Image (cartoon, rainbow, N blue to C red; front, side, top):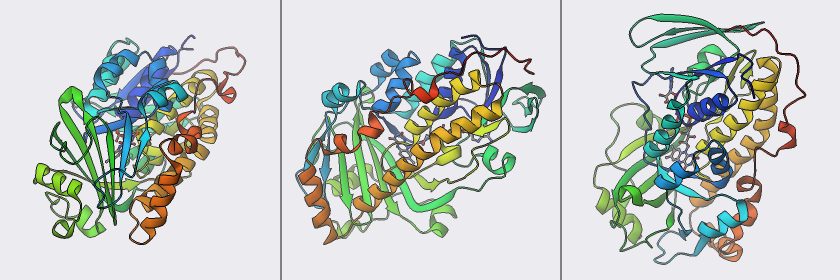
Length: 413
Ligand SMILES: Cc1cc2nc3c(=O)[nH]c(=O)nc-3n(C[C@H](O)[C@H](O)[C@H](O)COP(=O)(O)OP(=O)(O)OC[C@H]3O[C@@H](n4cnc5c(N)ncnc54)[C@H](O)[C@@H]3O)c2cc1C
């Protein structure tokens, strides 16, 4: 498809921003990505990419590069608090691939960022500006006007078809340009660490994802064999005053001494005080777009990471928004259509993530009922329940069929 001479600015070279840049560049758009960091930088360690996002990334030509850097766990072992053996192993691996047409994979975030960045660099029509100091954007009847203060102190101004804020949970595009709300601290912090690949072999089954439930906290571990590491994310409550202000703690302050869990004990022993610390915030804003300015990814809808879908939703956003920006006559209607298509699904995933948090953190005796239900649903229960999520395929969605071609408009850029 021809690019219609459209230029689109994107703030943020995260997963959302780079996926959108790639999708737009494939349609022939001229894309300018503004990133405040001096290089592509992914905070944290592992990321799980479910088939609904993988299908999109595969269509962007990234299948081989992702397969080379990711791992497909055969299942998720679920350990209720104190259990030495998994209550159930939820199938992933071959079963997911057969059922949903793409793998469920885990990988290091830096590897995903590198795959996306490399792909972006292959497009002459993607210009990535790093070290951007500030940007201003104004929407008007014929597009948007953007002013960028670049790393070297120079300022550039341009007209463009649209400006998309993919600038994460604390998005400036959301708060300062669209005058939307700030992010809300969720009351939970994520502790992240990567351990040596055999560090937990004594207590967990190698080659699988493990989900460890505790009263008020939980942990997820999975192997990153390409890096000879295991990724660990541990989620626990923390009051806002402590989580957001003052010096960050070095290690999770769980009641370690009282823990009756071999797995949590082993994690603590292996991790020491080397944890990364990440207060988890969420974003709910009714305004995803105004005129030619819109939001995608965490900037629009950061959610609790308890269904591992934040980055996946960002990838879906990009896949839906790109063709709309290239086919609708004006950016305002593309963005309105995009928001209308995305908001119900994102809200459903948000509710699922919240419900997971509730279930994962239950205390005795409520755990008894939860465990009984999970056991009863069995190894395929989650796949039956989540067909609407993992089986979703953006491309054949009839709502997304490009509208009939219209005579190209004189765009400004
Ligand atoms: C512990 C944890 C585990 C998670 N696990 C998963 C998982 O397994 N699977 C999954 O799908 N999701 C997961 N998520 C969620 C996922 O990390 C996020 O949803 C995803 O990273 C959002 O991507 P993004 O591109 O929207 O934002 P970000 O990744 O935050 O990227 C935003 C980019 O914008 C840049 N930026 C910010 N401000 C500016 C500015 N003013 N100017 C220019 N650039 C700017 C930033 O530097 C950054 O590069 C997890 C989250 C957490 C906290």
